Length: 60
Image 1 (spheres, rainbow, N blue to C red):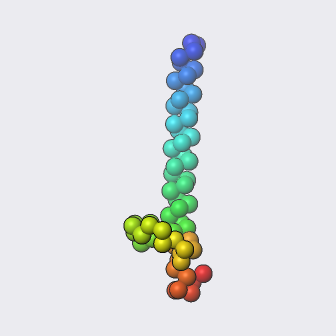
Image 2: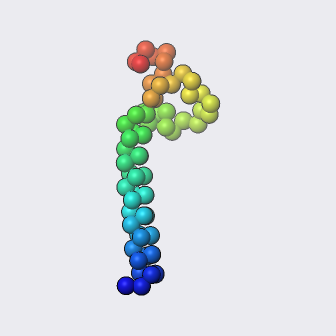
């Protein structure tokens, strides 16, 4: 097996690991934050939000 064949397998393995990491991270983020918070464009307004729940709602 040549060097380039090994490099190709290493690159595909790295891409598979990154894909699994992105999918797991997407599920973790979607379980921690509600969809309204993720789709909002409020920049810098994170101070009153804890894991997608507003502090004034009392659901902390």
